[in-house]
Length: 344
Image (cartoon, helix red, strand yellow):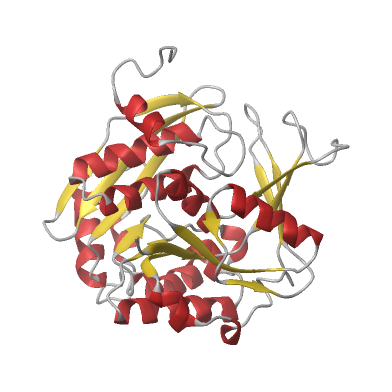
């Protein structure tokens, strides 16, 4: 079976325990994560062969990362050993009215310093059955962007399906408009787009269509939503566009909804809005993305693809850490009636 391959950074996540702030913490919990890593982990648990293209240092921290990848069934065939640092991010979990915060420490990591010449793109593409990349990765620096562009270009030339998650993080870009321009070039190479922004839809007057229409969450105007989706699909040749909507309800409660747009038949599919208590929201979007990829690879109907992704998305909100600890059975039970009963 061909591999699902992703290009992205392995990051060490350091978090204060028990909802403490960084300034009051005396210890930090240690985990590993990263957008592409999170996606691969879920797909590996669901039975697919997965592998990460990345770079890690050849030291004890790098060996910790290797052990983590092995435990989560993520292949390391294309791992570059270089540099001295692993990327770090500090995650301060919010509570009630206090928002969660992320502080990145990724500069000069092994992945940050890796170059196009470090990766054998031909060898990577030989075993590739699917390629996934996110906007978080390509925002790191111009060289990493060029590696992603080259890998996506090579995969597209070979007819390999490509999914791209826009995954916008304000702190990683100089401006929203910069992100729109940079990410749009990559979306043009993808078959599946996760998210609606940042992507450029310029009008004849030079303004972005979404800005002209006042397009923003929550997506209550269905006609407006379908207009934007049709324009995205047609302009960028996208087969599918998938995205979620998250509204804050009561304390540590989110109201979730998901959408899938079929660019070939121009039809929009959606789930019901559901309320859920949140343990950890990091990696939830990646769990949704993994569900979309899984449903597509399984050849499920569009609504079933979306419901599967929604189940994975919801389930991750109940799991501590970046990685979604989930099985096919978990997803099937969540999609069935009586999902909240004790499983005996």
